[in-house]
Image 1 (cartoon, rainbow, N blue to C red):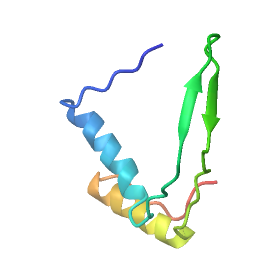
Image 2: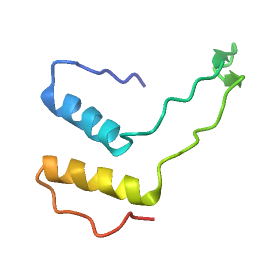
Image 3: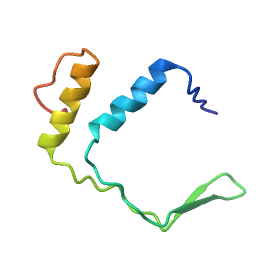
Image 4: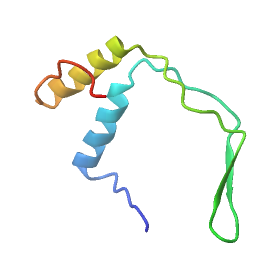
Length: 81
């Protein structure tokens, strides 16, 4: 399966910006990361670092609410989960 991203479709740009907005304030995590695919199509990761969320739940909820407000979606009372 191949996924294609057409940078000229506004709904895709809006979706990407919404996800980025949720993590506003999260510092970038720098690492030496590489991957390879063997002859059978298996993915191997080397030197990777797991995602480490620095933002508090309160900040995440604030960010989610800002994205919801911008997109005229009903505002959440709490984070799902």
